[in-house]
Amino acid sequence: MHKISSTALHTVINRESKTNGAHFTIRSIKTGKDFTYKITRSEFKEKWYTHVHVEVGYLEFVRLGTYSDGKITNKGNAVETPAALGIAYILEKVEMEKFEFLDSICDIFHLGKCLVCGKTLTDSKSIEIGLGPKCRNKI
Image 1 (spheres, rainbow, N blue to C red):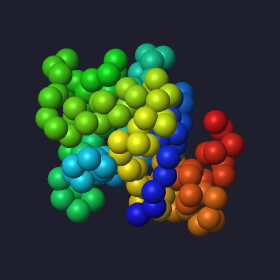
Image 2: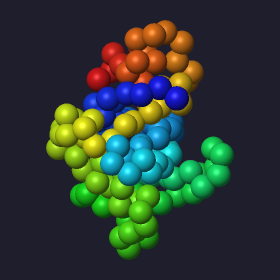
Image 3: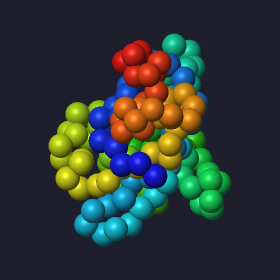
């Protein structure tokens, strides 16, 4: 795993384009607890949606719900599991561009693949920031 800044997540959730499954792990600096997530993006009726999944087994993910307005909802109901509350909090702070704060409370790691397109990262700059050159240039 490779540690990255929370700014990379801003690219994942604020682009009006599909994301093929950004996989990353967030670890609380205070508690050491971590969750691994997969985020995908899709468009429906000219609106973009951010879908959140959490790992329940080695690279086995279940859908938590859709992120919007600082919370995760599934079929219209708020999801209040620790994993859902944690990622909702993180994504809300990312939207607010509170990167320094986030980087002081949690560590974010990617699994060696671009957080936007999912391709394996091969150069040091891409690995360092979690985005491949093509996806990085589309920001």
